[in-house]
Image 1 (cartoon, rainbow, N blue to C red):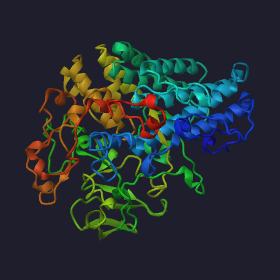
Image 2 (image 1 turned 180 degrees about the vertical axis):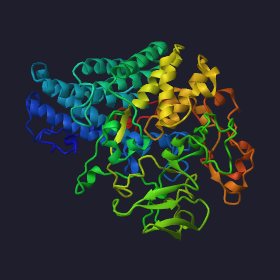
Image 3 (image 1 turned 120 degrees about the vertical axis):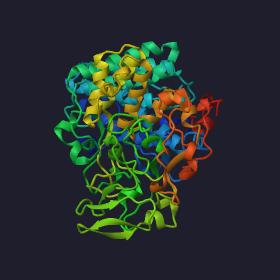
Image 4 (image 1 turned 90 degrees about the vertical axis):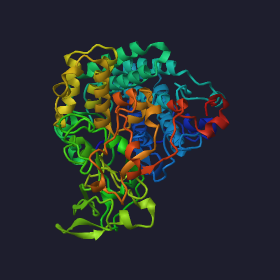
Length: 598
């Protein structure tokens, strides 16, 4: 067990006030901690307190790091079809998840500020371990600032413990925040190791990887009119990690998302940074829930509420095994869409006809159940023997419990089939960054610079080969050197490889394709009167309804929409959605944060 998350937070922990000070640190006046962070023990304990705050949750218990992909068109949030980007009221100053994300990241910043300022420069004359710990705190602060800047744009950026008279400090322009982030990461990386001495700690690879991620974001938004400069930075930072030769892809994709698999040495080679959770069964505060009912169904008795679900918009990103998009491949059959597909589709989500595992007794007994969107009963194993059971996803009168009635006929499989736990007691670690992202970031940045070479092609194909997918250039040799086609393939790879890992929301916003993704309602499985068997051979999504849609793999279902389940019929796109609104509670107390677009 990683002791970062077992350390007892001693009496120097920072606290939060109300109002604008909710997320800016202030020492508890009843605690005397003068000089504590100047000691190596104090620096270490203070750093542990920052790590603990990484695991803050959104609504309904899931870690916020992955929550946001369900706010993209590739997922649905909760059971209400009006929550999410462009769906009625979802992106507003009053939304609780926006407030939680704002608070959570400022708490990371606040604790980091207390440790960094409290050390008072003593780290310079202390041990190598102390230098490393001080640098970890700087990277964690930069991580918090990046999360805030990428969501809100201009942000309040305190770099020291703030006094009461500073609670109304002006917001810092996002370009200046970006400059600070890169400077911090560059300087901190000098004192960090390439691989961690202890699982879950910041490394040089994470510092450079975060710099690459942030640079890719700034390039997409053309901060300061310097898009090309940021793409170059993204490529250079990613290249540092690649050329270190310290990391590689795990041979087994699914090992990245289950507790036992994550501990394997070959899996650790890919996991650049993990959000760590405890194995201590008595400490329920370190567990979390994913609420995906289909994964945990078991004759109704084990069913849990389904709050997050994939959509057809994601499902149809996955190519057929021949490497062609489903509208171009002869292998695609609308009546059996789960056949002959990129294996990552089935590793990421489950749909009608799939067999999935579940447990109701923390892995003592592992059973199987067949996902069924239509029938009152379905097949499951009981004591290892197949039998029939009531399919409560179809028959329940409480739609909050059904991915069928409140969703689009799919459930997430990624992270949800860890058989060590049941339902809402997950404790496998969450990937904060893995090597596959580094490879795809490098490739995308070089493509945007129109500097394509064999290193770019190999980075993409390396990710595809792990999934047993053919090299993209063997499928279509004309892609090589064609910037538009290469842009398409690397974007498609990011969606298929990194879905539900907290990156897709920022991806489509920086690509500025929200108008395409929000053009139509969300669609899912065929309605009960049609079922998959009733679809025609020609009932295939149209990706060519717009040239930009074609190059960004944005499907339209309008030609056969009456045959499909529909949700979120009021979706629309507004350019202001490229950044989120500040929480209303903060606007009320800090008027300088007022965003006129909201």
